[in-house]
Length: 235
Image (cartoon, rainbow, N blue to C red; front, side, top):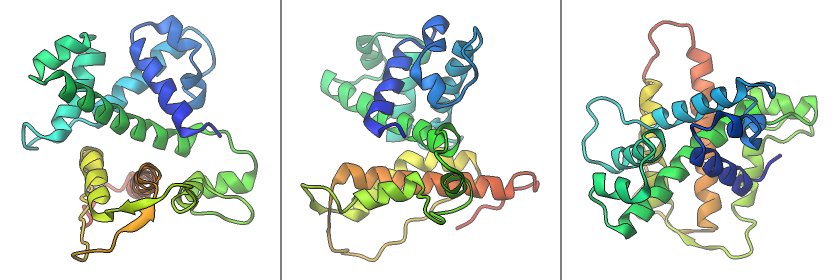
């Protein structure tokens, strides 16, 4: 299984060459996301996958503008779809250089969250049937362990834990995923007790695990209700 930092770097590289189909056709990300065999159409397919992932982050109609979600989406669209320079993107979004860098990192993190979930769901070659069943059906079965469970195990296993505000991290995760959920006719409500105690964990690993758990839930929800007409909107 590819490590998340390596995967993230692959995504960033591919975005920088979004319109170079020859480059994309041989890029490792194409194999990780299983976009097709290495022929002339693979580059175009990976281009489409990246473009659709960016569109997944577009806030739904009626979403307040401006907002962090719109700012992230607009950064990705102006920078990679329209192929503007970073300086031009900052100008279009009226951001300072520092704000632009921060927005870029937030936008790329949100995008790689979407693509990483796709990799976990359909891109990673199963090492054995039990592991495949864990990915496609539920949490670990038998001796196989899903990658989501592996991420959860890392939360408390870091060598340098720090007190983390779980509520703040959850709010940030939901802000990132809300456009994706809205496009799937799903509403996620955050209902936490006030003044929750802080938890000792690695902030990045905890956020990553929460993102993956929620994306996994969204993908399972979509499969269950696919083809049933109007999709219910759970509270």
